[in-house]
Image 1: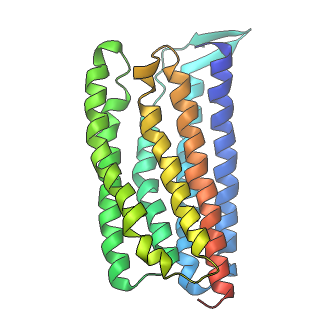
Image 2: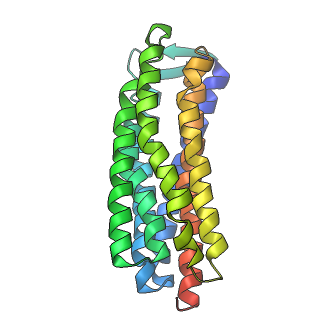
Length: 245
């Protein structure tokens, strides 16, 4: 790893910590500004950011233990940069992000339960299937990495299908003043999540640069799919509350 790569990873992790810390305070503070029906969605937004904040702190600590920058030279300490923190965080945050969208739409109890259960199961399965391949970056291991990528893509494609087609009819039934916002929030989640399987493939594209690219790529995707998505959930909840919907 070169100095530029070290600084990119270091600064991106630091930025994510600040983003998720501030977002946690914001979402919990804004619960009082929305109707009771939407407080749960805001609570989930705050919890997601809190979980991400904690795991990024642990990643930041792990990164600093694994690498040290002294006089313009990167020293490898021998400690391992623990990538499992990302997956443990995703195991909790990915299902909650989907539930945020479902809850803020205020669907019927039956539809909320059905979609929530199915999307939660698919999200957990996707993260579990992807994790074993994350550490396989050696050229001789890339075949196995492809296998885990393909397995994780099955529940991922189901989630995309559910977001694109499954929620289409439900979005059309939303109040007029939030229909476009709900649709945009859905597409933001779809777009940002599509970035993750692409980042996963970086070692196959350029093994030499994959380490820095993976860490920075995942961090950018997390900031968008957790922080910015949460802001959109808050705006939807506030507008529906103001309209008494």
